[in-house]
Length: 367
Image 1 (tube, rainbow, N blue to C red):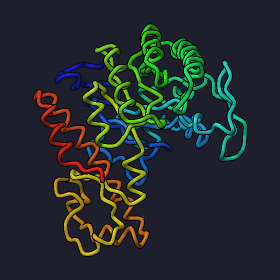
Image 2: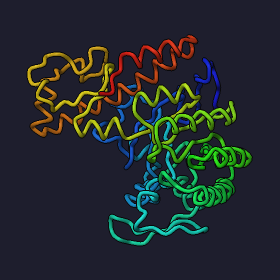
Image 3: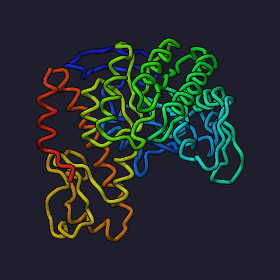
C-alpha cells in the first residue's frame, strides 16, 4: 500500500491511497458492506456512485459464511464481486457491543455467538489470520473499545490491553504481501492517554492509523477536540482513519481536523428507515408533506434516484413497504456521501476548503 499527500489547506488533507486493487482518493467515505454486501446495492451500483473502497466486517464474516469458505472461493473481492479496495475491521466494536455475553482477558476475547450460541474466541493473532484468509487490502488489529464515560483508571487499563494486542497483531502480520495493517489509537476522552496511545502506537510502525473509541456517547465538542488532537499528532505521511463517524456535518468537521478516511452505517441504515441526506439537510420521506411533491429528492444530486423519481413516488414506495424504496434511498444516500467527499477533495486542492465548509454549514440544516 502506498499513500501520497497531494495537497493541504489548513489541517485538511487531499491524498491518494494506492493498493493492489486500485486508487483511493482521500478524504474518502467507505460504504459499509457488513456481510460482504452494501445492503440493497450491487458492486456496479457502488462503482457508478463513485465508490473506490468498501468496508467488510471481520466479526460477521467469521460467523457466516466463515473465512475458510471465503478463501476457498477466491477471497473477499471475488466472493462479493467487488473490484476495488476493501478494508476489513477487526470485530472489536462488535465485541464491545456484546458486553453481556463476552469475556475479555489478556489472551483475547471469548464470546457467545448470537447466531447459534456457540462459544468463539478472538485473539490478536486469530484476527490477523481471519483477515488474511478474507484477502482484504487493509486490515485492523483487535482492540478494546470503551463506552463513554469511563474512568481514567479503566481507560488506562483498556489502553494497555489494546497496545499489547497491537504489538502481537503487528508481529503476527509480519508485513504480509499486499495487505496493509493499520494501528488503532484508543485512550478515551483523556488527553494524556490519547497522547500516550499515539506515541506508543506509532512506535510500533503501522501502514496507517485509525482513531478509535469515538462516537460512543461523548459530547460533540469533545469528539472534535480529541479528533483534532490525535490527527495532528499522527505521522503526516500515513493515512488517518476516524472509525464509525458519521453524519455529513461531522465528516466536514473531521476533514478540517486532518482526517482522511471514514466509515459509517448511517447512509444505508437511515435509508432503510426512510431518511435521505440532501444538500439542504435530512429528509424524512414518510412525512405526509411529500404526498404530492413532484420535485426530486435533491435537485443538486445526479444519482439515478434523483434523476428519475419524485419525492411523492418515493414516499408512496416507502409507506407501501415496497422493497424498491430501500434500494432507491440507499442509492441516493451513498451517492450523496461520496459526492460530498469529492467536493471536499476539490476544495482542498483549490485551497478553498474553509469557503466550502462555511457554505455547506450555511445550506445544510440538521433539523
